[in-house]
Image (cartoon, rainbow, N blue to C red; front, side):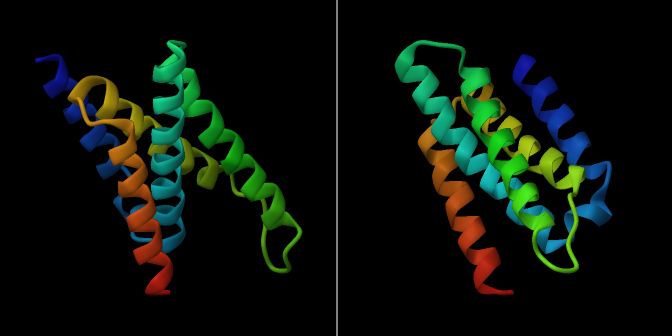
Amino acid sequence: MKKLILLSFLMLSFSGSSQEWNHKSRVRHFTAGAAIGGLGYEFGKAQEENRLLWTMGPATVVGILKEVVDVSKPDNHFNTSDILVTSMGADFSYLMSEFIGVPGYVMVGFGTVNLGISLQFQ
């Protein structure tokens, strides 16, 4: 039951702003967050430390750093919603690993493959 509730919550959070999810940049941020989150989850699990912190922390930091780099590019700005979407990808990775039972390394593969496909079809 707990897994069903979490999965339902996750699906609702994605459908809440469906127009935003059509944007290629959002897909890239989400999948990068999922990949980084999967790595962090596996590291936290191996260290027997707070897996949520190790999943969310690195992905959020990378998302912030990416936006800082974006500011230096012409016709670009700091976008907090991109950071949020990157963090949501990490959250997805955590939920899939912790409650559904998908190993973190599978989430790394999911993120990496989807990010690669997204970049290839620019």
